Image: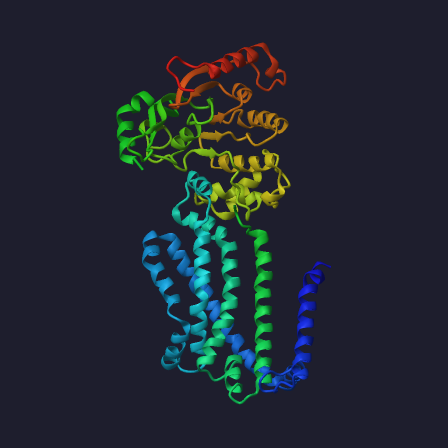
Length: 251
Length: 277
């Protein structure tokens, strides 16, 4: 089976890495609070699964809500830019500028303005996520083949019809690329947001556990976060495969 | 868009043009090379011809003689030219009033055959269901029966061209422009398409301007063939075609056909005294 063959090498290498880690930590008697062995991380995950699940759920909500809002807002913004050159010239600089200000400085500000609850995290996720979505979507709308546009014009199509019936479907594969990148940075955004200040979530859990030298718990949270990110990315990738069958890339 | 210029010309020339469906008078187009040392390249020079109702004309000529540019001008896609193009069926812009089938089928990959064909009606404001119904009723004529729900990727080249042609004709425009529509097809499919096209157009009253490289195609399908030369793109001469029954399978080897073919080939080869390469 192709899936098994694709995953064989990374799994084997990963497995060897974990074994090497375990052996090295035990052989050199490394302090548990400095670098725990995989075995203690695994038992931590089992012991604290309730805690981890609860906070994973918080982070997941922030990611998903922020992602959906970013996708919606990004689609509207991209449509406006693609529709009007004037809007493109006036909006694009602000969009780029929004990404230049480091999130690490915006997050604390949001904390002060909006509070430590989920909302400020959702905004952080949205800010980081909308950019790849908008850029890819605009590229997609601009990628439309001039011959196709001419064909629409010879059929008497209005600008609005060309936009809805040609540009939008043409840009769908590009939207998928934007969403794939978006979901990954959404995870990063949620953690950064929580790290700066929150009342829950895996990032908050990590931040709280580290000063207490609960390193195994920190690692456990990292692993749960990683697994969550990989699954989310895989889901978007799966949706992409289905969508691309109907809306292929035109070249 | 030079709407004002075109309608001004039209008002003065309307009596002269009334009997023609399409009339071109001294149509020229220069391509701005953008450099001061090189003069602007004349893509088309002084093109003049008429087309009546139910007439089929072909334009044949070497690559670069401006044949496709000419179709772009006639269709209304390009309004940057000097001279006059009058279309008796539309006072203003010709865009959307003339059926145009380009070399590439330009079918939308995300739409089924039926929805691709129905596009021309949809864009004119016909309801989704009505346009699909009308397209559906014509599928048989175009040899596409049973393929309504297929996607373009599943069809052969010839079938895709037929879908494109159905789309172009569904709006029932009096004039149809065909830009080397069968160029990408193999010879056998191409002659099949010729026979099918003749049948389709018979009694339809449609006028057609066909651009082609294929001399046989031009003679078989047309009432008149215009020969173009390049540098600058211009009409050099034309031939009236009379070969009897076009549906006769032996017509392509008949005496009249062969005679016309040699004349046409000679005209294409002929280099006039001051002409270019």
